[in-house]
Image 1 (cartoon, rainbow over the protein chains, first blue to last red):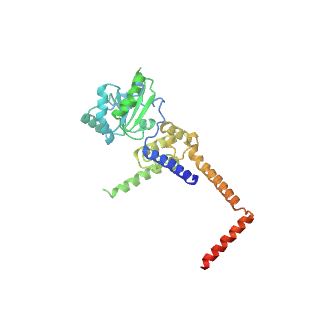
Image 2: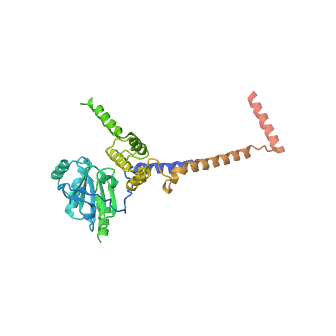
Image 3: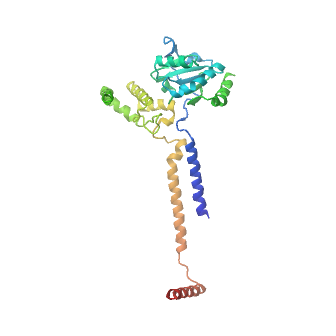
Length: 174
Length: 149
């Protein structure tokens, strides 16, 4: 009897592991930066390139850093929801315009609307590497002390916002 | 237009390696040990993804400024996590990966050993009792009888 039971049990265990493996998205690399200070940068603002932005200017605020680019279709899809968040005033969104051209980015913002408080132009992608970005869109939640508290790889959705980000924002704003 | 494309690519490559072949070799060597985060089954050296190119540039720059390979790897793992290492490091999260096969091998050997031992005990010759002998003989006879019939 055990002759058949043992292989069967092993087989079932294998199937369970494979099923879990299939259900997971390999692109969801755990961020090494959660609960670490947001990396510093000093980059020009998109609309006013003379203005240099660095994360230290956002101290005392809980804010979202949303990585996007005019070349990125998923960002375009995410855009209307970002506008919704901006209108709800739940949390300010700052953009990191990644590997983009200024004209293209400005064109997208005037076409689809601008949910961002301001945009950081990272056209060479240096800040992106410091933030461990693997693709766009990606969104970081950064607290008042400039510590990264959460990272979402891929588009923000109402579900993620309700269940993960907003509760954290409330807690961090307390 | 299309025909000129490969030439373009060649020219670009030649230029970057001509600038400093030793440095370029070091960049490629280190990139082979790092994972491209866009196409995850490729090394950073093989990938043509934009991000891979940016990362190679970053590595090149840091090498130029005199950083050691170890420092550069530490810089990248601080940002992208251990996932960026193409060869998984030996640490508690990867013990199963590194030592699991050996554990399975040992378990297999143990089971094989036990099985063989059991079998050996089975084939030890037991002297037949008188009753058994009689039974065996009648069985053999009846068998023989059937064959000839």
